[in-house]
Structure formats: C-alpha cells, structure tokens
Length: 209
Image: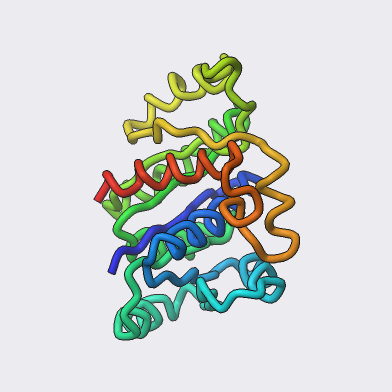
C-alpha cells in the first residue's frame, strides 16, 4: 500500500481539489483507492456526499487516530491512500507526513504562497519524509510553454532543496466545475486539458516511489 499526503500550511492552494482529482484517476486506473480526510473543514467528505459512484472511498479521521486507520485500510486491500490535510495545523501535518510514502507540498506560484512553503518544508524535513512540490492553480501554458511566473516560481523553489514536479497544474474552470456534482476532471471532460494535466502529474508521481 502506498500513501500520498497532500500538504500545505497555507490555505487556498487547491490541495483538496488536487487530491480528489488524483484519487479518481487512480481509481479509474484500477487501483483500490481511499481518501483519508483529516481536515476539520471536511471538504473531501462533502464532495463524496455529492458523488454518485461508490469509489473512491472517503474516510474522515482525526490525525491522532491516523496510524490505526492506516492499518485498517491496508487490511482492506487498499493500493493507494491519499491523505488530505488541514492548513495551519503543524501537529496534524507532521503526523500525516510521518505516515506517508510521499508528501506533495502544494503551492500556487505567487510570491506569498512560495514564501509560505517554508513551514511545510520544515515539517517534512523534520519527519524525514520523501517529498516534492507541486505548483497548482497556475496560469495555463502559452503556446505550449509555461508562463514566466511559473518558470520563476520553479527557480525560486530551488532554495528548499526539494524536487518540483515537472507538471504544473493550471487554473482551469473544469477543475472546479467537475467537483460540483461529485465528479473529477477525467469524468467531466475526459479529453480536456485539465484531465491531461492530472494524468501527466500522476505519471510523474508514479516515478517517485
């Protein structure tokens, strides 16, 4: 069983949105997937209530009970768990990072978001977690090339000494529209650019184990 933690100490990075789109794609690829929602805002659980499909499973959990729940999910034969964490909670984030095989620190490319990554980096380095940064909600590429703000963000992130996903995820309406009725972009617009970015990101994630 592989466990992927999506983490951001700053709110508004689109962490939960990214988590759900990745979880649905993994499910479509035949994996036995569950999302563990340890965010008190419970956005992933609200999405699941709107969803008409039974999979992927979404399970609410207090961070203090995470270890016990992971064992239970492994016994159920899960292939992949996604941990959706709360912002502004270093204790819960540390517990989730310690339990994960891979931590994805999610950030927008704006300067205030990039500066805020430092707190998340401290957490994963203290826990010794395998980690990488994913740039999310970016301006879409122009003529196949990343925009200047995304390229500059990549350069700025080098200071943290963590890998940065070569796939950045763009700010596209499909990501939000899909979630309204409990879907993901690969279901809402299977051949769209948003779905393509999620597939590219997932392909890269699979090289990180």
